[in-house]
Image (cartoon, rainbow, N blue to C red; front, side, top):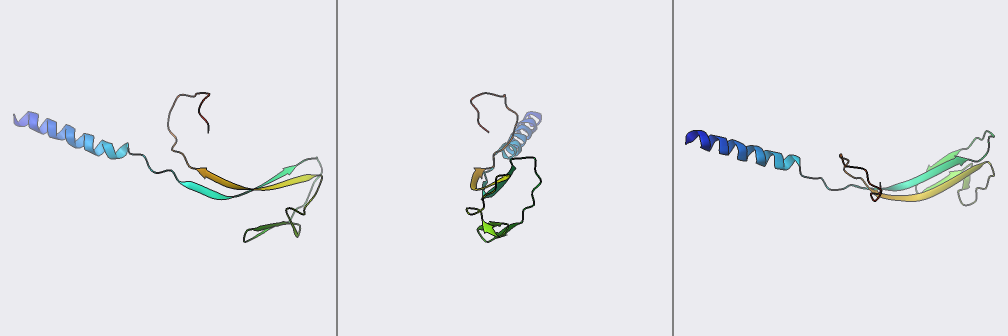
Length: 96
């Protein structure tokens, strides 16, 4: 009898301990700004980018005033949630 009671208690203790391991964490929200710089031609370009507070300047000018045919610069807001990665089958309906 004692042998069965100890086995049952051991199984219950292991299952309780494993429940915490399978618990999922809350998704973290990541916010910020992305600055994307793309080279349009094969020419070399030199840029000076200054970020002060919420304002971004390229070669001393605001992004909205900067215009160059060789380089394109885009500033955008980013709002994503970090996902928990795990093993799952690939599907065409799942978005990353």
